[in-house]
Image 1: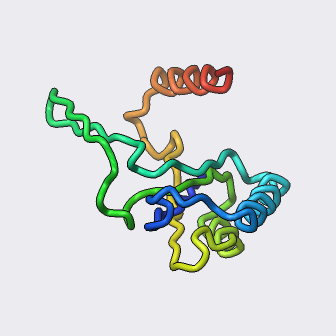
Image 2: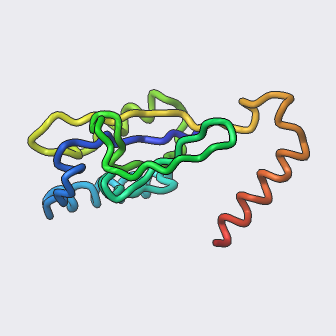
Length: 141
């Protein structure tokens, strides 16, 4: 089972405040532990929303909205992608994480990634083959 572990943004992360050497060290050690356990697929921190954009869809119309975005508590500051046996295992690993926003309250969200079998009959053999080709191409990139 794959899970995306989402670090929610804070006022500091949205202001572009960089983590301290102490936090970078703690997170580096934590990421190393995840890698050694064989569950870490990828991870990254994200730039503040002021450097981002959103594209709003309305029928065939596309509207670009430049950041920053107002609702800090709904924004993402970083993520991990893990392959674990269960949501409970993901929770246990998150509980071991250093506080990503020292000195303030922080929140990490755990969301399961869809697997092919979750889509049922609508995900036809042809669509599965296409998905496999796309994933193989992405690995090459």
